[in-house]
Image (tube, rainbow, N blue to C red):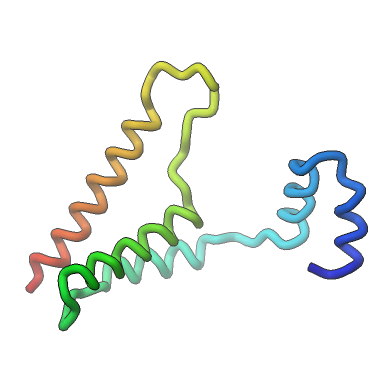
Length: 106
């Protein structure tokens, strides 16, 4: 982080204000990276990798994708619809399907 921005950031009233200032200054669209990771997931193959190494490779890509494009979450605080659990289950199901689709190509 450059020194000029450090001094500007030190005058932010809260950590949220600092975060928003950082996003404005350094934030970029993650879409190209998301595209690349999704492409990598679709092209991954086990090849000569052990099953464990292959699954680890997929999990690394899934984790990167989750960081760049996180699933939406309910933020109302008193949610009783359990949408967060449903989205997590849906994501896990999609990952199992991706794993099996590639694994079954052998």
